[in-house]
Image 1 (cartoon, rainbow, N blue to C red):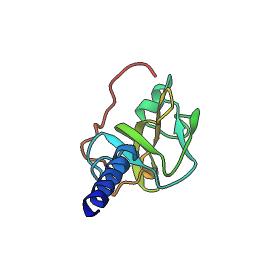
Image 2 (image 1 turned 30 degrees about the horizontal axis):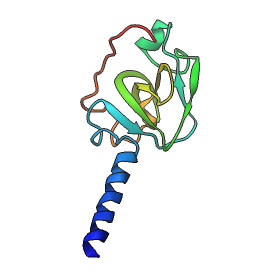
Image 3 (image 1 turned 45 degrees about the vertical axis):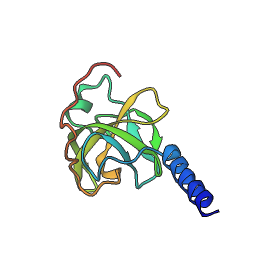
Amino acid sequence: MRKRTALLAAAGALALVGTSAPNAAADGHGIGYYGLWATGVNVREMYPIDSCWDYPSPANCPDVLGQVGAPTQVFVRCQIPGQPVGGNPYWVVVEVPGWSKYGVMASYYLDNSSNWIDGVPDHCVWSGG
């Protein structure tokens, strides 16, 4: 009976691991999934406005692709200095699960312990949207 209970508990633990959402990147290190702590966060269109790439801000990236919020996790590709939000001067290029386009959002809203995310490139290099 104890063996059966232990096997069932182990199977249940594996099922939870296999069905959970992607984990955030290792506490602010590297490209990967990061959770959000806020709701109603605008993810803005990056194209075709060069000023959005040069200095992300609501004025330079006026078109909103949509909004995201906790508990959603976004995939952070790179970070760019831009208009500070909440004292954080970085914006991140993200993929939102289920969306067909990349977008840019203020890094301030990521559930991360610092403004700068170690291991995430400080430039973005690719073409298209």
